[in-house]
View (cartoon, one colour):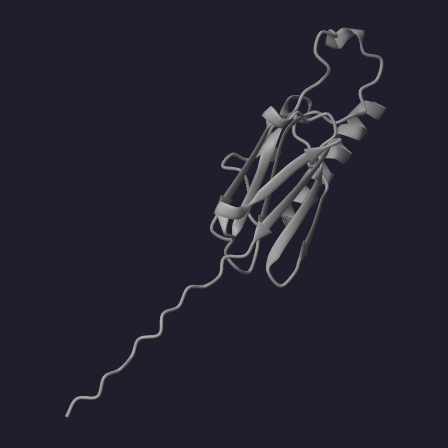
Length: 149
């Protein structure tokens, strides 16, 4: 008979799989095949909006240090990854309950226009990452057509 802990692990796996349906890009390895007890993956919540000249993202990353966050821009995609570590110095066997998710995370968001990666701004304050992604201005050049006689 499954224990309550086993049921919770199964629910977390279902949530992870549902969340992955909304991400445009998946990790290069399939974590859904790994046992949930050793996977150590979680999905931070993200808000995203668009204005005429930029995209903006807010990600809740409580307990994640700046050094443990990786932010990359690739064309029209932004890739947010990193790791939230369990409290250091406390042996796992001393815990009575662990409800705060820890482990690696990966979120990929794709936009309809390219991002100007030279002007991206990211700030981490009180566990909230705010990223401003200016849209790339399409460059165009008018080519004059000469008249030949």
